[in-house]
Image (cartoon, rainbow, N blue to C red; front, side, top):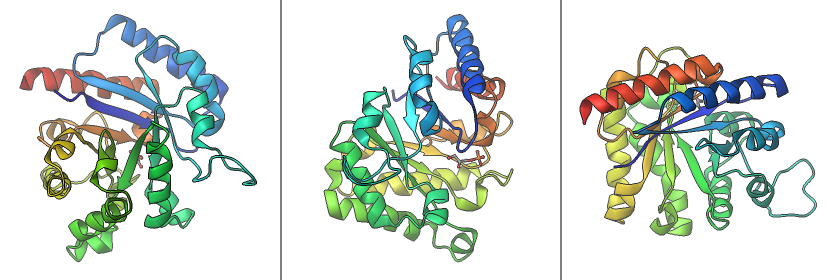
Length: 259
Ligand code: 13P
């Protein structure tokens, strides 16, 4: 069985004290409770990855980066390469987040290059996809998701999706306080899995499809119970260790009651 993968995307938040306290709290929690169904990861800003890696030493908490450059080295002022991330213990890299698509004008083609550089250096991409409110209202969600996946499928083939993560994050649900309907999310996740399955059944079965968008401890039940929802990418509710731990605890309980 795939672990239910919960990642806290801290976005542009945190400082050294925050990192230390947060990781200590999670470590204390994990010392008391063994996780049977969930896997967890945190995604701090670049500046705190190194420190986080030191604090996370000897734990099962994986380290995720929020971004990466498409180049390995050279004259690219202000950028961070995949080798640098690998060097400090990063395992997963978020790409295609709507906040980067919107505020940094990242295109599907550019995101595909990031996907390639991550895969070819043996790290795991978390490809964020999802539609705007207008696209949802126009019934275009599936087309948009397919289009966001297509560029990578066409550039790199379905094999590139082996051992990767797709995070479905409807843009209108992010930070809105109102999550999407879990049944509708299941429907989209199934569409995504079937879309990959048309090219390769095994890869589609193994792919982890996370949901992100206003997840909190009070609304996770129905999401977890859906067959094709394999984890969460959480923003705001991951910004205190207490909330993040509550979500993980509750997820463990719900999943244990299903099995
Ligand atoms: P919120 O959980 O704050 O809606 O953010 C979701 C998100 O963008 C995670 O990447």
